[in-house]
Amino acid sequence: MQIQSSKPSKQRLFQREAPLHIKRKMLNSTLSKELRKELGKRSFPLRTQDTVKIMRGKFKGKTGKVVEVNYEKGTVYIEKITRKKSDGTEVFVPIHASNLMIVDLYREDKRRFKRIKAKLAHSAKTEKAKESKKGEVA
Image 1 (spheres, rainbow, N blue to C red):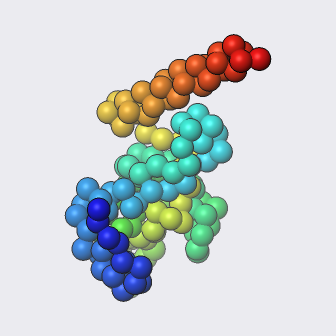
Image 2: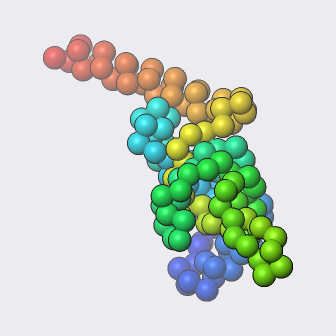
């Protein structure tokens, strides 16, 4: 059993020094109410081409597609969410995943949904089994 520290400085160190496969899981965003019902999950890791809505900060309320996910820095770049540099070039504004809500998922990635579909099918079977047992008891 691995002991995890409760010290904030060690938590920040872990998040900063974590390997990329763990940082990817840290970059979760909440799902919209419709997606929550559909997938049976509350949050989901971000991916390029997902449509998100900004919930906090200067750009609150704006919607766009994810252009890039930077796992090293823990930020997401969204199309049309830009600012002008002093030399006049447009750059994407980095936004943390916790400030976003996923409105629509990129569904062309079959591997991404394979496990979720299996979990939903399994949970549906277990619910039917529970209902049939309740019917037998009553």
